[in-house]
Image (cartoon, rainbow, N blue to C red; front, side, top):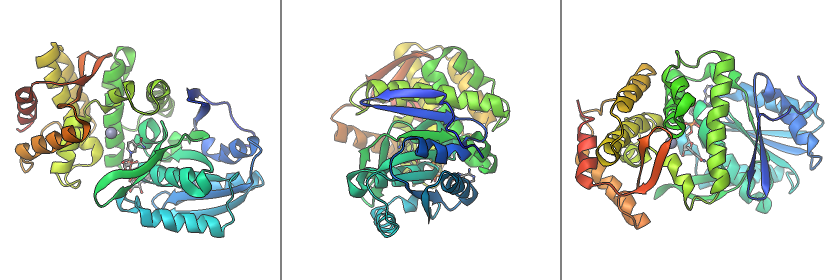
Length: 365
Ligand SMILES: NC(=O)c1ccc[n+]([C@@H]2O[C@H](COP(=O)([O-])OP(=O)(O)OC[C@H]3O[C@@H](n4cnc5c(N)ncnc54)[C@H](O)[C@@H]3O)[C@@H](O)[C@H]2O)c1
Ligand SMILES: [Zn+2]
């Protein structure tokens, strides 16, 4: 177990904060040294998804070894835990464990625990220190980065939350070894998104990716590049008023499909797989994107267990209707992210609704 804090592989300047990202085999054991190096409070609340308890224990042990007082709270796996009741339970557990302002919350899990424990850290005693330890591929390349935290209401997902940057992000690709194949694939849909956003050799690496998860070193490098892409975008637009919208590539249609499937038929990444293909199709019609990219992307997504055809049980009208509802809340028209080519991205596009409908219809086999 390491006793000194490792050098981060990335350091993002987001607003007034610098967010270091530690990434590599074994870095999960460095959470304690990373916290101790900041020489603040010695209390730590580890909030861990109950599907990944051994990772939580590794984090707890590294904190104990670094001389900290550690309290561990497990959260039941699944989106249903991302609610105000669970937030209250954790906040009260933190209070009983004597967690104070200069102490820290460490989130160990996927996006559910990252968002929930992140919001706990943002709100408990008006804000305590936060370290994100993502354990899903999706969380490593997306949700643990950028500071969005929050919980769901029955009325809507992520309806209560805050933008709150972590003091550090610690990602150890070794933990992905236990992640179910379907979850790995879902995270890979976001990786493909970064390939399309960045173009160039990232797109080539993504398109040529072997079986998931892939070789350790290559995987760590892929995660680093995706994380760098996200953090660069967030650094320019932390509050999501402009450029951060590019991260929504594939998400306009994707959200429509996810919701029309009742959040059950498709997991998020699977809906995004279909949403990416629809966005590329619309990009061909509206911006002249070369259709080769859609064929290559479909091949890449399909090879990694992601859907490239829409399940016939999904009602296209309902997908379109849900997308239209999103538009009213935002005051814009369809508001899609489109590509002229990989790496050449346009946000806030307002494509012809007939073209969008046709792109969704073309997904039906
Ligand atoms: N904050 C953001 O910017 C942001 C961005 C995207 C998504 N999100 C949120 O992220 C959530 C989805 O995150 P997710 O896809 O990581 O899902 P998740 O957190 O539900 O994790 C998926 C499943 O994997 C299990 N798991 C996690 N790590 C594991 C491991 N290493 N080994 C074995 N099992 C493991 C969990 O128990 C869970 O069952 C959603 O709530 C979404 O709203 C947030
Ligand atoms: Zn997404």
